[in-house]
Length: 498
Image 1 (tube, rainbow, N blue to C red):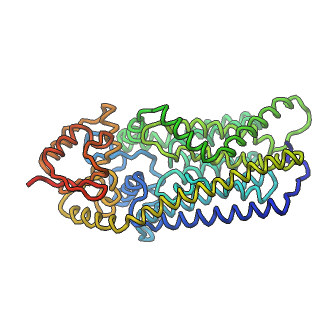
Image 2 (cartoon, rainbow, N blue to C red; image 1 turned 135 degrees about the horizontal axis):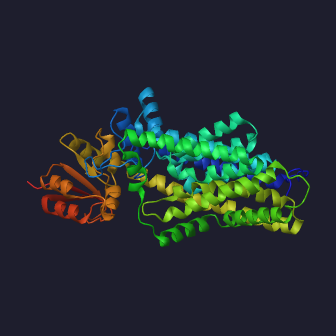
Image 3 (tube, helix red, strand yellow; image 1 turned 180 degrees about the vertical axis):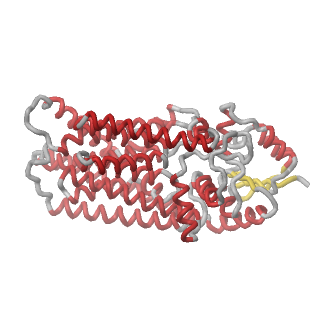
């Protein structure tokens, strides 16, 4: 599968279909992104803690505390770069914190899509196929929805892909290798799990070309990571390691992993199958021709010694989606890898005999249509349902904002409204619920505050106070004993008994 072979032309009909598909995906993506960015309240539980961290950075407050039993009961799950960037932009331009975080994520999502498109074009020499790879990535509902959330993942993905692409194109240049290493450092200190896939692929890609340079690259990258981590950890009295490593070790459920992969398979059946087949084809072709004296193109070499290892690392990361509290963001690297593999699959199909080519094109046609059919209702329903609740959210926010003037307000599903009221988060329910079950948090001091009725309002999402994931038994029992409840739609409002 050499990229030195003459390109097979793409028929006008197929090109027209691909252009229409790309336009539809871009339109859906734009509609979703704009509506998420401008939504005045939280779209996802994880947004509020990160935006709270950004505000704490602005106020020069401690981000990584060294004692989990000392209030406020919050942890910072991720390294500091994303909230720091959001804080700087919000501080300089005086922009709302949530909209700033979402806009930053959106920009990095577009960068990720652009780099995936560049990979697709560079490996296949077809511009339309490169654009297709980018559209397939952006059109996946998980990406479309996650693209504009105020979360760390898109910044980490974009910088890791950028580092890998730089090394793919410029592995002979020391300055560019250093630049790629800086990209990997930025990615790792945005989200720690991104230390695996792209750096692994980068090392093995360099190792194939220059073993000494690869080992030096790995040594410097590893030493820099440890040095920076050690410095932050020392400045925070061990709080950095405690927050991003120790407090992040949640229970793992294999059943959850299977369920999440099943959902992805239903959404992307042809893309996943084609990606696996092309990967096997590349590995088999390389193994059967490894003694061949004919030179191998850089593109073919990267597929074997770069992209395949990136896919392996992405798969390992994706498997950790079984960790309690994880979400589809654990799939992002795998989605990026498959989007590039599908570009190669499209190129291979063009060189097949007419009958096989038509069969493969039919499968691609089915998959692309299926993405549109499945993605549009999923993304539209999620965004539209949030806007339908807007009057209810505004009424609830008024209640929370008013109570925040009288003391500390607690919540789980509506932490965003606590942050929007100008108050710092005092208790992160899910994170501390997991710490309690892991035996790492003693609820006694917090329960005493509840017993003393220090909190003027507690907003618990759902129809029950007994949510063991977020409000451990000692806490929920104290709430039931000393607070009176009022049910509003899908929230229970608790106020101190008179």
